[in-house]
Amino acid sequence: MKRWLVLALLLASTGTASPRRVVHMPTLPEVCPSNAEWDKLDACIRRHGTMKVLRDEPALKIIDLDDRMSRFGGIYVYAFKTKWDMRGTMRLWQEHDVLGVQHVTYGKHKGIRFDVGLSTAMPFTLDGETSMQGVLRQQETMVCFEDAWGCLQAITSCELLMRGKAYYSFRGTLAYADKQLQIVGDRSRSGTYCTSPEIMLQDQ
Image (cartoon, rainbow, N blue to C red; front, side):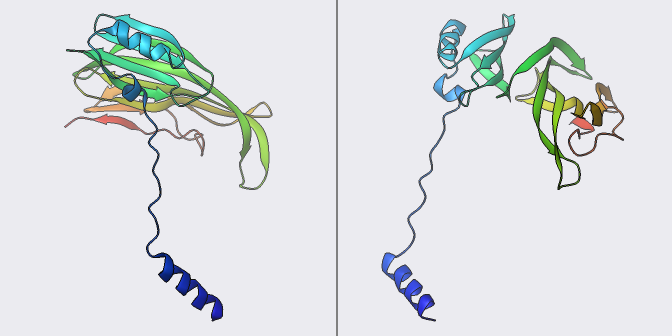
């Protein structure tokens, strides 16, 4: 009882608690804002990591920014109308391989697609108790359409390997049917670590 009384007196004497200080971490578009000249935007981005240009077109740039020591690592898509704006990003902090970049058409939507391969070695558990060293291999796919802002992203291929055996796996392909952009594939062995949505886009 005395403990609760002391606590009540302390709360009464200090008044309301001070609000926590919120620290805003700037994003890449904030430190390197949109610009009508690509050369100026390019120079700014290169100050924040090692940059590789994956696609260089008059109105489209896809860059791979290797900055695993901070918060800007990933692949960024920029498009030009009146200035260069960032359209979408796939955030990446680990080593990765760009498997392909291509123009695509799904239904009435035209855009750009790129696929990235990732491999992560770490302990995994199948029963919630025992862990084993394994490797999770994934293919991340991003699609950016010309008629929409932002990009769609999903896992289209995945396998969890432990002791040379694939415990979970999924192989998917993108297909447009019935006004839907679908990830088509056998999900019977996808398990916990290789789940993937069936639908990426639903048209009206």
